[in-house]
Length: 615
Image (cartoon, rainbow, N blue to C red; front, side, top):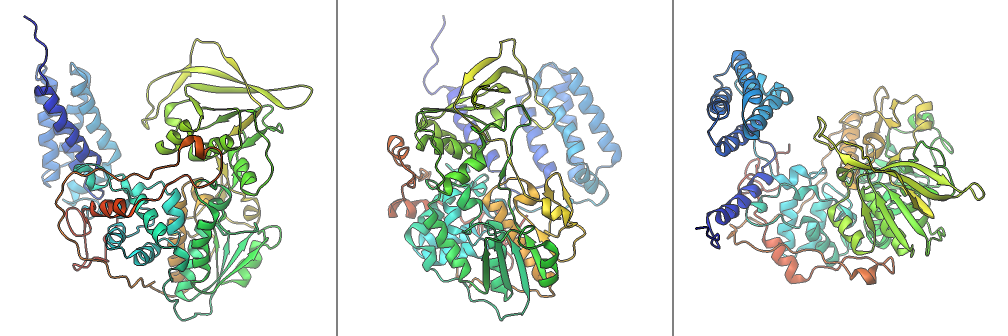
């Protein structure tokens, strides 16, 4: 007789175990040997094998034995050849996906990490000195001491927490509100429950203590050196901040009326109130000898050659503030606007009347979400976001979720064909979209699409916003002889511009459009390398004592989330959408930190809590 499965049967209990195991995989620490990771994944595949076919049952065991010999330093080039031929055989003859996928995974590793295999065979060690590093510190582009400032927050030492953040990042307030928090991606707390809400705790600190009122470290003795900083955005101001603390004079050339770059002109008020941004900027300007020249555009009001002649070094942090247009007919119509340009117009207070109008937005990045949510606040009647593939929706999930709450509608698998304009008015009146179907993944693991048999269809709109990327205004720098390729300034990992002595550059104008924290990291790296170029080796002292670590009791505890105002209320204005954490929430969330700088996977030098080994 057939029987109903009992509640809490073996499979249900196994699912609980597998979910915990998945958490361990997702929090795999940075800095580990990739071959060890591949061995772990191979062993997982071996455990999934049903054992019916020889290639999978016996072949994977042999591949594991060969991989182990490489890891032990007993392998040779012949071992690699055996591994390769064995995996090819398994891939071509295994009966099910378990063996095929596992074999292909090892074949991929032989290509992707060929240098690692070679080092294990010839040098009997990893390419680098692999060691588990502190995940949140390593994954923060600026390498902020995350466990340290969380410990300070736990003790309610908010001013010290802000200064510890400033040790690497002079924008504690701005990042507390808009950072994409990559530091949370590998948080070891995931093994127990959920990652620490690191951005939330940073916001809790700046909510409790205004960053403008927290004194920055004392600047070094003046050196007499002058550095020109082109661009007063997050990258340029970060560079100016650290150079001024070192004792150099930083002169910032800013073409706008106010500082902040895309933090001011690209991030909407409801996400980053400009008075809060000014808290960070005021603290930066007070940190040392920083002079700002407003309304000066390099290439128009002053030339690059003049800067190179009059200053000891030059840093270019011009960002990527120009929105892209699509190379198609009618893309230059008056009611077609790049998302970046749309946001800048709103930020500058220019009148954009879209009340009651139908808005279409092409693109799925964070800038596109900002534009869509801004359009909702300008009382557009409908806002539709179209993307070709699901993985084109690169915006933070929280941003997409908030946009949906505010009435923005989303459709994927639609290819943008062309723009239809009214012949009499010259205005866009509709867009044409082609339905797509998903195809095989490409070599980078990205979805591919192809046209569906469904016919294209016409979608009416009154305003078309193009969220299809941004570019830098590099024309004048290219004319000045600096190395530029595909609209980006060519600079190495030290931020030194290729072939230009004493000229450095970083941020979006080098990498292409990225995040604020990446721009901040570039400004920090550039400042220290400019200091070295000038013949110094200054250190910026933080002088904040981090509390000693206490053992955590590891009790699973819910993650404190940053709540937002009601969607029907917040969509009516541009007031800040996030609600501050309560004192109890902040304290409890800070108490969840496992202090990886002392325990588990953290690495310290000499047993001190302020010295880290970074990846």
